[in-house]
Image (tube, rainbow, N blue to C red):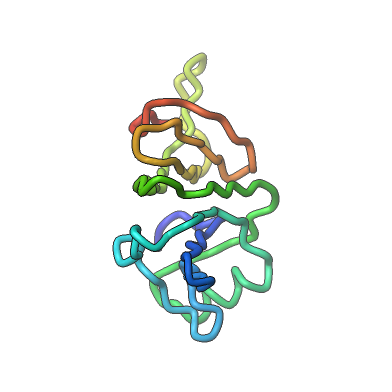
Length: 136
């Protein structure tokens, strides 16, 4: 299994419906690519609670989730802009000692087409940049 997820997304539509990344009833994963971007009015990334992380891990055979702690990001979607989202997984590297960190780190990138983009690290720290492909 891969690096545990610390956060999940929820898309909000103009008809009042919300589509979470993981269904709270059965734990199956909804794919970002299947979202209706034309109906979306907001999109957010939220930390897993301990209970929801355990539920997703137990019911979804291919996903490991863990308590997300702090940090959430929500953006409003206006003017037909496309939501840009991706999850990054990196291995921390100490440039002074050339040593690799003990475990992989998850980061999340969220913004609207054309930027700017918010980078949410698994520890809840948020930064902003105009480059969607910047690795944090």
